[in-house]
Length: 54
Image (cartoon, rainbow, N blue to C red):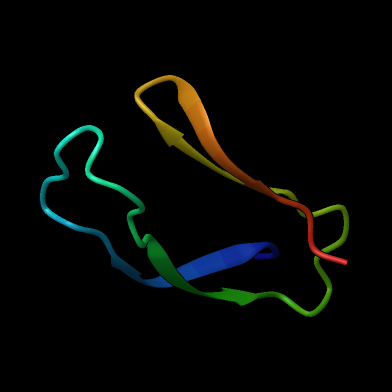
């Protein structure tokens, strides 16, 4: 099994719109053989985060 394994996610229970920045924390482990990996977070159907590891 190759890719990413989510170990822990820390998110606020609720956030009021317009109150400022919000911390979204995700502890993960990437398989050492994973190639072409792209991390994307979605809320409903909208992409809110995108990361391509070096």
